[in-house]
Image (tube, rainbow, N blue to C red; front, top):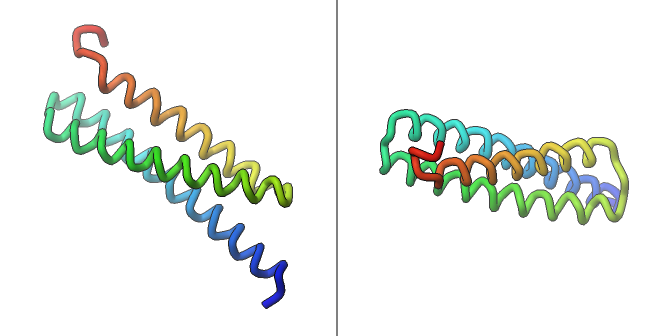
Length: 105
């Protein structure tokens, strides 16, 4: 396997990780929203843990994509980076909203 092929495989793996993290953030946000709507503290705590976990995965994936972006500039990498960044912003907003007292919401 050539060095270029190895790099492309690592790049593909990074994109796959980012896409998985994006989906995990979306799923966790939905769980947080449902737990808040049902006013279920145990479910909310579990959902917040999942959201924080997904946020860490998205952070890691974004760092990996930035490393690749410094080496080669590809349109797919840029698009996935933007989606990952948006997911991180969405996760942060969902965490902030979930941690606010209910009467403030």
